[in-house]
Length: 59
Image 1 (cartoon, rainbow, N blue to C red):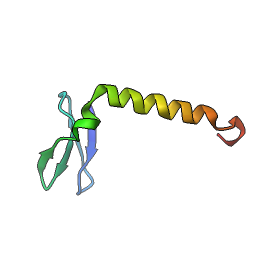
Image 2 (spheres, rainbow, N blue to C red; image 1 turned 180 degrees about the horizontal axis):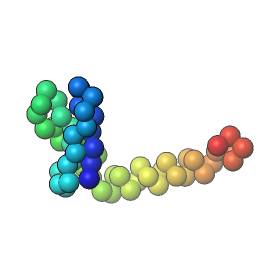
Image 3 (cartoon, one colour; image 1 turned 30 degrees about the vertical axis):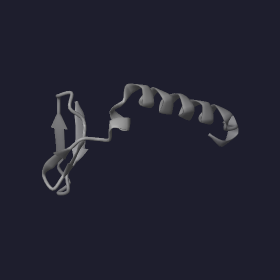
Image 4 (spheres, rainbow, N blue to C red; image 1 turned 90 degrees about the vertical axis):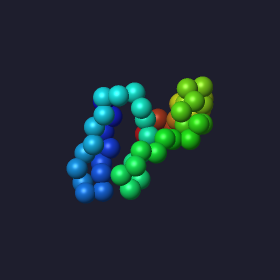
């Protein structure tokens, strides 16, 4: 279930598979790049590789 804070501080929840944001009460999808699973996998892999290079004493 996804959760999003609304402008009045309440939390909107959704158990559906649609992902995106809300602007002025209207649903807005993320960019095609953000919705692309291959791009998401690449971002995760690159982030993990970057974090692996950080010395452990600074984490």
